[in-house]
Image 1 (cartoon, rainbow, N blue to C red):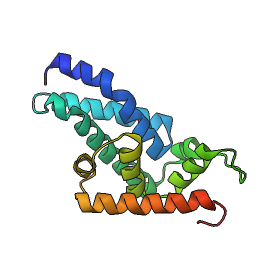
Image 2 (image 1 turned 30 degrees about the horizontal axis):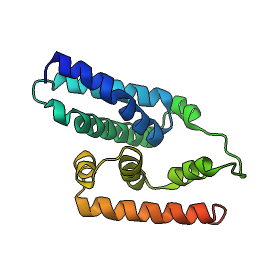
Image 3 (image 1 turned 120 degrees about the horizontal axis):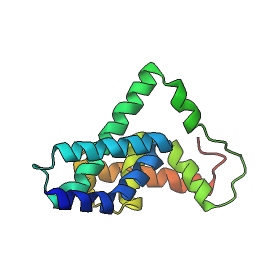
Length: 161
């Protein structure tokens, strides 16, 4: 990849990567930092990464960076980021979007990741497997389980925990 292709990758993929990470971590600042770190890593690897693989590289890098940050926060605690990610939720839902957001928030991280990559970002099973480090069968199972949970949650959000 050359400088022109790198700049094209920034223009073409930064919004998608940001949206994916923001949906996962629910923190604007964290998502911005992770996207920036991912592009820095891409720049460091610019000679070895083909432009056609840049999007998958960015999603994979940002996903793994986010997992590292969340694990560190869970282990050591980060009081500054807790306030950023606390949401005001009400028990009454006003629409399908809110129900879907609530269902996504209740999914385990792996299921949430694969559903977002498949249904929101339209990645193939093979691409999701490459990004997450899972095999295709695992990806399909996680997507099936996540969709089943979300379907039940949409039917009866007050019952599913």
